[in-house]
Length: 238
Image 1 (tube, rainbow, N blue to C red):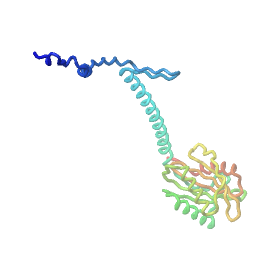
Image 2: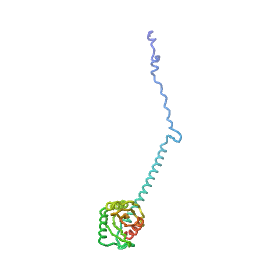
Image 3: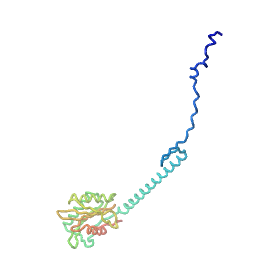
Image 4: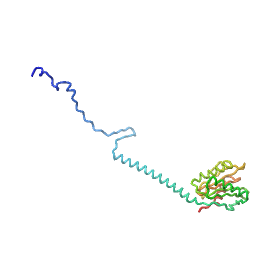
């Protein structure tokens, strides 16, 4: 071998070759559980079993709440259905006497009763409408009119009847809820004016009937008590 060949460096002797060899990468450490603890808040990695338990617990709470709401709704619906069923079959009449009141069968009274009956029937579809004028021993008159029908929203229908009176005679003001008595439903009283004369207006409504009375020269307390008496005498249920 020539002197030149003996002096040639081998690949292992060159610095470039030593630097180009890759070093063995260290193995990645095993992941540790995540744990964050800052005061009252704490986040830790939970197992799949713990997550499943929490989901079942939340589902149980949600279902229990839904069941409670459903039962409350069913109870309310059942009560309303019972009210509708017990009140829908109603009859209204105009007896010749109600306590100290006497049915006025004069021509003028009959015309007034017919007008009131037609007015309420135009506003609310009735199976049968009634109207009458009663006069007490003190000559204070009571105009009574109403009818029977299946009413799903008695309170709203009574408000509509009061609005009708407002259109015809002037608005009914100061409307208050009053005791509806043993027959139930809703009863309200207010005041209005007719040709400068103050009138107290009271009415009732349930799921089977609606009636309104206009009282001349009577307070709301007197009118409400008298309407309960009129209702007992004029309304019957099958």
